Image 1 (cartoon, helix red, strand yellow):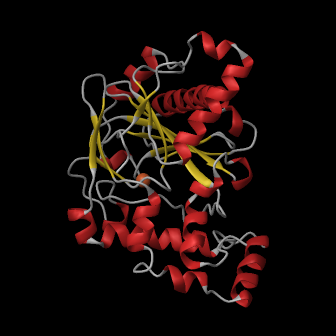
Image 2 (image 1 turned 30 degrees about the vertical axis):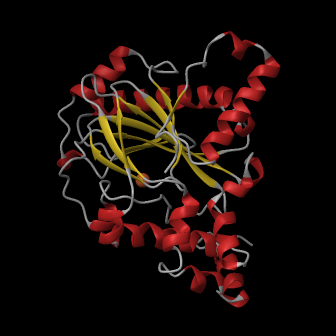
Amino acid sequence: MPDAPWVSVEDYKLPGWADANQKIARSRAYCQMLESGQILLFHELPFDLPADDRQFLVSQPWSELRLHKNVSYRPGEDILRGVAGDSTTVDRVHSILRNYSTQVLRFAAEFLAPYAGKWITDFSSFRPLEEKGRDLPLHKRNDLLHVDAFPSRPTRGGRILRIFTNLNPSKVRVWNTTGAFDELARKYADDAGLRQFASESALSRAVHGLAGKLGMRGADRTPYDAFMLRFHDYLKENSDFQANYPKARLEFPPLATWMVFTDGVAHAAMSGQYALEQTLLIPRSALVSPDDAPYRILEKITGKELVS
Ligand SMILES: [Fe+2]
């Protein structure tokens, strides 16, 4: 288990951030903590999100009928998905998520300066439904411990960084998490089939590479990406792991913001309603501590390259 379930960030916006050298050193140290599996917690909003917008999001009559799994926003294309309803409401949600994404990206570019300009901006989402007791198929359940992997957006060894905010004005959001990825991988990766993924033939890799160039969805997956998709499902399917693996319970207070590499830190959302989230894909070349990346840990276990 980590020494502490999270690291509370107390120095953001304090004078040190105005000094260029100190700022670079602090930023780099925070990137290092994240990459090694720490969760960084801000007790207060570290970016601008107007109270009116927060109030609007938490006061809508959200229900399963009006939603897919979440409301999602794609910053690159300015597309909102997952909301049905009258156009005034949809337009307002769209504009709130557009502004949220802009603000959180601006904050991340400063706070995590080593990644700025190098990341791929992925989707943001709003999660308006109570997590406790949701009726979802097993592989889509949020309340089972898992590491993240995206079927349609292979990272090729890059990492999945997520920034969450608990918008609930009065209730905590509760997570369970486990310890470091290397312990998890050493215990379960073989049973999840890592060695079969690692021995995928050169011909099969070439076919995947060609299909990827032709734009087929998810076809440019490396063996690492394929394994991580399997590992996500394997962990959710494994009832012994869910019940018995050491875990920590985290309670994120109202308006707290936290950031975490969710491809390395297993997590489960146990309860909570109304969260905003922005995902960033950090390429291998931008990592400050590449030996902590799951692809490197898995390569060490198998002795084979997984991201070529
Ligand atoms: Fe997740």
